[in-house]
Length: 169
Image (cartoon, rainbow, N blue to C red):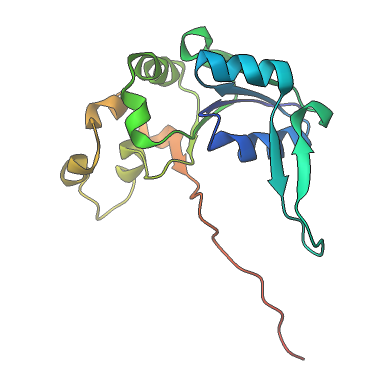
């Protein structure tokens, strides 16, 4: 079954979008007009290292089976998507068009996965022992996040979570 994913942020989101496209899912990247025009004309390209290969592979979205497009925040209806990925740096959510899109995401009740440089406040509200009110000082404007349901927000750190090691016999 093909899933539709909306990714807020074409920079952080490019690698994740490529992996979704490789799995034959459809992706929309949210970005500025000039970036959207470039992506819609030429696609994206990332370098991915593969285990056992000496050099990273160049992966072009135009050669993958999933469908990629890019739109500005004003052009997006979040209810058209199965998942929203938050892949912008935290201060970028202050821009009026991105803030309005985030409100539409909340109203549509679409599950969100964060790849942000810091966890969004709704995610922190789910963690016992963290005082989200005390954490508000770390955010450019904590009220950007007020409308998102914490039960619909999860976090995937952009940092590697594990490393492989070879055990000796």
